[in-house]
Image (cartoon, rainbow, N blue to C red; front, side, top):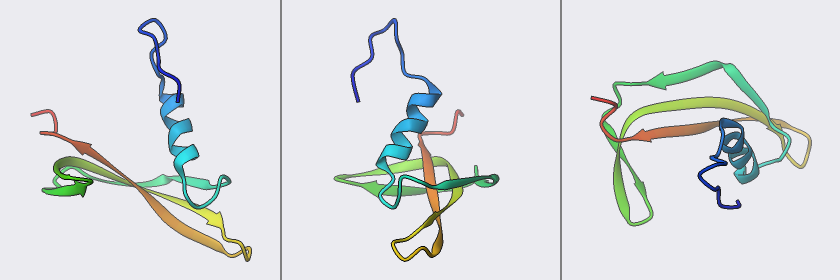
Length: 87
């Protein structure tokens, strides 16, 4: 992704594009945004690479894609917000 100059900051659309590009399953997925689950009382950490990070809020977003045999598969995108949760 190209660097952004201060006069051209990234947008929400840029974040969405990044998430779609990094999807390891298929480039044609169907998001199911009407059933987003969120947990603001989550107390835990996610281990990532060499660190452990406190997650204050988590979202679970369902999506569907078709595998190589044409079978529809349902998976989930998890988004964790690191930190104190704004308190």
